[in-house]
Image 1 (cartoon, rainbow, N blue to C red):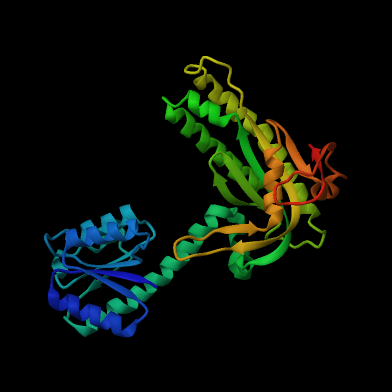
Image 2 (image 1 turned 90 degrees about the vertical axis):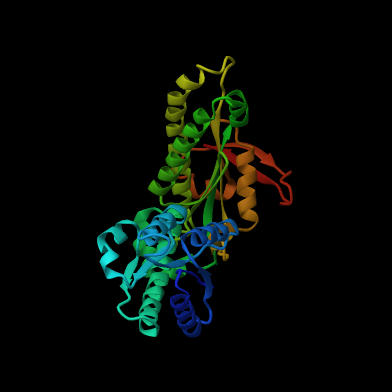
Length: 357
């Protein structure tokens, strides 16, 4: 349900606009504020309650001649995806260029009071909602997909729908990271800076190998390979992409650690030992956009995801462990060695062979 916040200190204008919008759009939730301060309060409350406002409609002149401009700026600060439309009957006070610089989606000059102006605002509010939805989709795609894939997804949005596919799942986690955090708890920026660089490296490496970034989990990363590509090769290309991403990230991770190690040693007296463990598995999963009113999440679901995670938990620092189903797809091109046979995977019965890259 779209949420619209109207901010105006003129009761007649407020009532007219609320009536027109409510009658024409019964599915909209319309909130009202009778001034700049009340409007900002509602904006903050809605964000706190995880029910953000989609479009703000604000008068220009209220407590001051710049009240509307202040609201525009506040909307942009609090929620960059929220749309804001500025309206006024006092054209002489309006600087359209300044309004757009402050973040206005559109500006309405109310030359006449009442329903006609309200209907114009109604039309522009609908346009703002369409633009917000488009922006939300782009923001969603940027979190998970290489920008090169945007065109493919826009041409065929059904790729985001939940479906069963054979994909390769990869997990990474930093061994020794918790101990390092404890040693550097008095210097949090030395941890946050490293973690930011590591996550950026992980995302970039995944994208370079045709993968989808599923999520960051603390110092862990989950990626999916093959969710958008259907090559008819039983997932061989995607398994190769995942393993090559694992190798590339392992190599580049060492460079990042070397860079930060010089800074860490200034504050940590004992030996610092951290390394990247990786687990990779290929299997059939449900994959797609699992969306809610509050959050979109493109992810994979099923026991094969859990199995990939369990494999990663067994990978020591610097090791890439892969399942038999992945090894069967990459063995012709990437050397691997049998490392162990396991049968103690929680909630996943069976005996499984693991290989190390």
